[in-house]
Structures are given as structure tokens and as C-alpha cells.
Image (cartoon, rainbow over all chains, first blue to last red; front, side):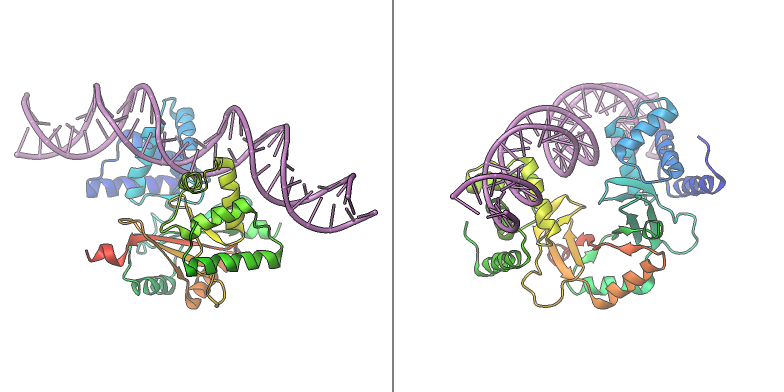
Length: 154
Length: 154
DNA sequence: TAGGATATGTTATAACATAACATTTAGGAT
DNA sequence: ATCCTAAATGTTATGTTATAACATATCCTA
């Protein structure tokens, strides 16, 4: 499967990180990851299974697909959109700055998804509104639905 | 089905609002709503179906359940938690202040859910970080996972 | 190189959600 | 009052998402 240069950079970065941290990026996991890196939009688990079959001429069971997705999500390489049950590569992997709370703008018209970084002030505000309750956050993720710039001005 | 006084107040408020706005709160919808008002934790659609059967000795089909839930969610009386596929009554219906962006703190240990209001500063910050992209929001909802105060200090 | 941990294979099924079309009911117009 | 229409509900079937349970293979390490 052919990746563009920036896509290849993402894959390289993940490979390096796995080598460093001891996470096992097996052949199948790498193939799944490659599909997600190359995808132009978020994929459902079953989309992924179809792509896998089409691209690698090899079956991927639902069970395996979900296991791979769990692994990649756990590791922070991939995000799951709970509101649409889809998966997408983290778009901030090759940034240098500190990893932030992922925040997704999901267009309900064209289904495009943009991952934006949460701003510091916002994150602070969010956390303070929560700590008051004695609640401790566990990697929050924001999914915001609406219309993207294109669909707003057709 | 017996509701506590504050629960009854929620139901009354919704009945009044429907009478005012012309929304049709049919008998079945009211029964579903009553179950959700009385529930001590969020319910899945199929939880609701079981409760309905148990309480009203009458079948509720999946199709109907989802239709009722859609209606109640559309109307803003009920929220859906996308991360857990569960539904719960809006806990701010009998507040006087302006209705806010719903924000949920979901405990991954005891599964308790707390609905807190988003603070003004946070909402502003959120919106400004989004408008920059030309994106227009459509009733955002935040679901934040972590551990509640009880589970933090057992 | 044996043994345990991690990953994957396999089968089945659970859990969540909606399509499509028929029928009933509520409420306004005449 | 009763007809008409839109909204709601009934019914059947099926699509979609996700996991349980147990078998087998592979990898690392002592």
C-alpha cells in the first residue's frame, strides 16, 4: 500500500515509538494502521475489514479488527469517534508540541472530520469545572457536531 | 409508577412545556419518560424495553423504543450518552437558569453519571476555538470519562 | 529450549439500531 | 359531526456494531 510522504512519516514515527516503548506493532497491526493512515475519512470497524480484505487479499475477522483497533486506540495512535462509531488516525502524531486533548469537529452534512487541538485556557477551564466535583479525568475527548465551513457556504 | 416529589416536578414541567409548544406527549411517551425520570442510572434502549415490560405489563418494540427516545432527545428532555449507548433524563430541567451545553462526568468504575453545567467561560472558549475554522456548532455535548469522587477515595 | 505471556484464529452470539410498509389515532377544516 | 391529513404507532425483518469463550500460534526470556 502506497503512502504519501507525510503519511509515511506518521507510520515511521509510530514504528519508532513502538520500538522505544516495547509496544508490539505486529504485521497485522501495521497493516490496519496503514489503512487508517491512508484513509481520507474515518472508518467504521467493518469499513476497515472491507478495506483490509480488498487491499491485502486476506480476511480480517471482526474480532481481530476490534482487537487491533483497541490496541491502536489504547496506544493513542488512533481515536474512536463514539458518536459515529468510527475510527481515525490521530492527526497530531507528527507535531512537536505536547499531546493535547483530542477534539473533533464532525460535519453532519459531508461527514468530514477535523481534529483540532484544545486550547490551554479551555483545558484549564474544563478541568477546574470538573475537579470541584472530586472527579478525576481519564483522557477526555470532545466530539462536536455541526456544519463545516464548506457546508455552511455552499 | 410512583415518582418522588422532585421527579414529579420534572414530569409536570415537561407536560407543561409540551402543552405550550404543541409537542405531543402521548401516553407511551409519557410512560417512557416516567421510567427515565425514575431511573437511578442511565438506561440502554433495551434496558428501557425491559423496564417498560416489567412496569407496564405491555410490550415495547425496539423500533418504538428508539422512536420514543428520539422524540424525547430531540425535545431536549433526555440526553443520549454516545460513549455508552445509554439514555438519561436531563437533570437540569427544573433549574431556572438558561439551558446550557450538557456535560457528563461518567465514572468508569461505578458507572455513575453526573450532569454538570458547562461554565460560561468554557463555552466561549470552546466556541471561539471552533469558529476560527468556519465551523458552526450544533448543540455540542461533552462526555468525560474518569473516576468519581467516591471511587477515587474508597 | 521450556514455559509463560502476548497475540491471533475461530465460532458463535450479544447488543445496538433502523428500513419499509401497514395501521391507528389525534386534531383541524368544512 | 365527519372527513381529511399528518403524526404516531404497530409489525416484521434485517442491518450494524461489538464481544464472549476457547483454541492455537508466536514471541521473549530465563
